[in-house]
Length: 366
Image 1: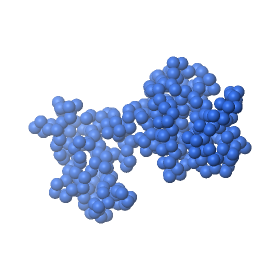
Image 2: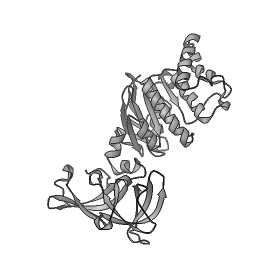
Image 3: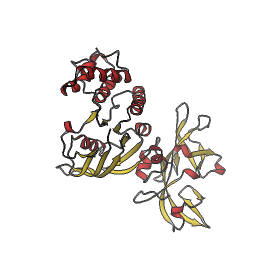
Image 4: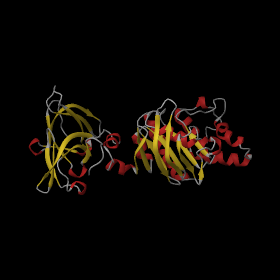
């Protein structure tokens, strides 16, 4: 296995489009690193530059102790799994698995050993004589994984490999990937737009936006302490609620005041000596508590209620309906909480789960 280093990598296309701008990521030997972001953020371009399918405009890429920036794809000793399975339809599963090994002139005994090991690990041993057209989508994706694994490369690169699967199969295959990583201990670089995949699979996740790396950290750290408002709004489902507010000093405490709320907290160390300033208050839907309106930090009006079984997702409105000042926020509550359309609901914000961001830059304040 091998460490992968992406050092100040830029990619600008001839038409002037900037796909990657100063990407710096150090993937440790044996780590599962997930690149996550919306379409067009540069995650697939970054993966393709590591694979050698794209050439960086500037910067360097290392696999192990070797600078591979200008090394051909076939000489990088990596294996890729794509969104499309890209299996040979006229070959059996066994032949699909063995094809790359036969090109290397590997001996029959070693080819058979690798195929048996991989087919047992991926539950393909009863499917070896079938062709791709006789397999389900999940089985074909496992064959694509197996074809990469049998090569025993230095690193695995995954480009949205689960996107073509239905919801149930995605969950199952995601678990298989996690078990596979634990078993192989391989270095894996995985690209997805699905934050749930990122949170459950990655040892660390790298959040990209408009070609720039926003944050690279363990999943729970990104969720609990996002470095800016973009990361805070992107990671987490439903998305974080944002409310404009003003921060004021009040007898040693910090007052947070908005159009429809006002409360005080102990000032975070970063804001202990700050003067009054505008800011954005972030609070996750799961961190709002339903209370009596006379004990609430803010009072909202129920707009839409979505029962989800184990929880209820409610869309609430702040401000006068029909005016420009109305704001929508989301609440995740227990199904035992009674919420009626059009009725007022009192909300208390968990003080230990508040997020404060600069209004202009979006940088984290607390």
